[in-house]
Length: 102
Image 1 (cartoon, rainbow, N blue to C red):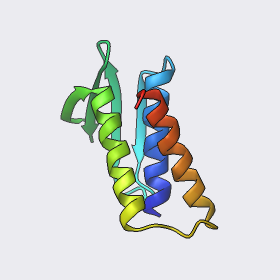
Image 2: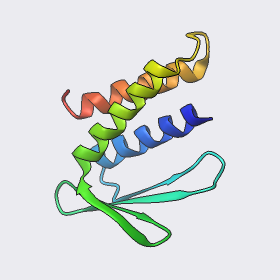
Image 3: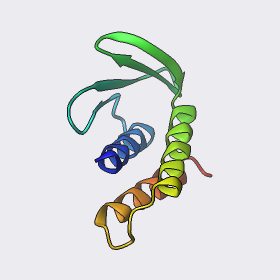
Image 4: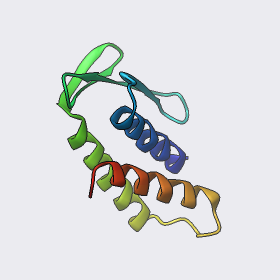
């Protein structure tokens, strides 16, 4: 289930970077937690949990950190190539990385 959640996180961050959207609410796969990412200023993002600010950072920096973490997950706990989720997370990594010009 972690792969589905990470894929959702990467896709949500990509939408924040590439569309006029101002917010993205990430909900853990089992709904045990929620993080709200809200754009501020030009490249800033506030991250809150239950209304409590936990971070204000560059959206680009947060997106790069998410890509790095996803790549570590894929390399340390790989899924079989035949698993459709493996393709989903690979695509999400590639699409977000392209938005970051990496």
